[in-house]
Length: 197
Image 1 (spheres, helix red, strand yellow):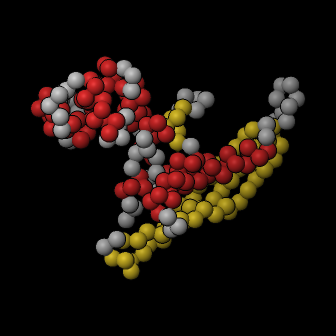
Image 2: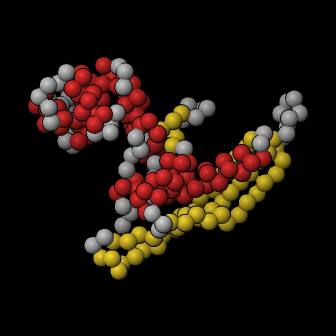
Image 3: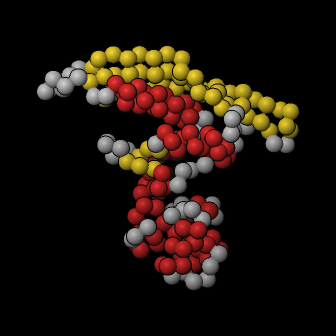
């Protein structure tokens, strides 16, 4: 009963790299997705907080640790059966560690909400190495023509549900993109229009 729009992939420009070089979507992306798809049919409740001093830096600067446990509640409605509703809850826990106490608390709550969202499938695809590679290909294809051609091949395989080990034919690509002109400029324009780039 989870709406497909809730779990659709984020545009690659919303997927960033953290200090550990891991892909992530910032908290505003999650909240915007919940608002766009569900409107007012979701709620975030903080169940428990822990906040304490962390170990100081080598230079003696104080640091703070915050841990948040919360519950994301979503009301799902069936568009075909307006009287049918389902309420689902998922828990999430997150931690924040920072020099600024406010930042520690905000980070902990954001991470907890994101973890609860993962339980509903939001941005869960970022845990897949194949999907992370595809996102990197999208980034590269914005300016690199060779990466664009590789992306067009992978995109065609995905869209036409082709065997991933088989190279798509010219006809497959034309069918997928809906254009006869397979110049780099034309292919890039189609992918931009479709939100792939």
